Length: 121
Image (cartoon, rainbow, N blue to C red):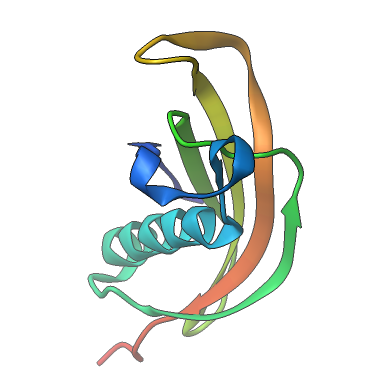
């Protein structure tokens, strides 16, 4: 099966809550980007996200974090692809411009979802 990983810095403009917390939709947007690349690589089409079967917010994501979003295809149907996603915080921002690479990444969000692609000609 195929695995795709994207890394993205979380800008402070995305902080919505006290403590520079970022809403969960930010990470789901990253999962959508990963799923798009998976569909392009497998099928030559961007595909469409059909559904999430499970989403778990396990740890906070904060502005200033560096997120690593990974998707792995775990099942392939005729037009559907089931994907398992994980978002990890690999670097954490601090005060002012300080930041640190984490010794152990923090699993922030896990999810499973299904994408669909057009039928093959």
